[in-house]
Image (cartoon, rainbow, N blue to C red):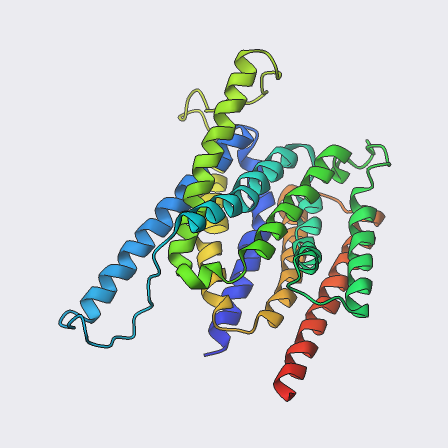
Amino acid sequence: MLYQPILALIAVQFLFGGLPVASKFVLPYAHPMTVVVTRSLFASLFFLALMALSQFMSKKQFPTLSPTSEAPRSVQVALTAKNHLTLAMLAFFGVTFNQSALFVALPKTSASITSIISPSIALFTLVFSLFLGREKFEKSTLLIILLGAAGVFVVVNPFQAHNVANPYGGEAWANMLNVASAASYAFYLALAGPLPAQIGTIRFSLMFFFYGFLLNLVVLGGYVIAIENQWLPAPTTALLPSTFMALPTSFWNGLAFLLLGATALTYFLNMWAIQRVRPSYVGGFVCLQTVIGLYLSKQILHEELSPRMITGSLMILSAIVLLTFFYIKRSRNKLAT
């Protein structure tokens, strides 16, 4: 039924919209890299369990089939060395750099800024798809890109000094790192192409997060070595909290939401939904993420919006809406021909 994937996509936007808000209760007590490593490990274990459950249910449903019998199972393509190399590269952009940049930026910027910039992933994906030859350049795409880029610039504006009167505007370097995080995830989306469908979406997600976890460990190890050799200053928060008993309930609630809600369930529901609706309709739901994120930031964190944040947000969302209509129009033209 069509309403089921639509409800799933709405749930995804709620979960993603709550990520920067939940992070504000976690990052004062845990270093960003600790959170990044924990998220990738939890996601790997989640999809490993999901894959094991899927295989168990498949065997239980078809217990007596002979090797020559036909069964409505998905064909599991053997992973080649090239596939593993591609998965590792995708994991670097989609997990390691994306999440590291995001969680390093969050303590120095607001949840509102993060919620405003996040939908620009769809616009960056369009740009990278054009460079990779997976999208054809048209006049409408130029308008969409320019409008979105102007909106991002209005929000982050690296040439504007930090406004002490409005601490929710974020520091310029953190806002730019937020943009880099969105661009990194968009690059992963543009590069992934048909690979998830070819090797199986659950197996792809498992390998994607597992390689991301390994790469995150390498980055964390390098960071620790740099601190020990005094190449980088020691962090204000420990890599691991010294005592778990002293951590407030808000920390554990925020961490549980990040791991189960904004990581495992989000990726699973999004993966399930996009297989059941046209990709052209998915982009429109991204706008909800900003609305939900800004609402939660206001209600829970009591953050305020500046005029430039509102203006930039409207410009980015307008570009997303135009992009959605562009995809819908193009898909209808293809069906007509």
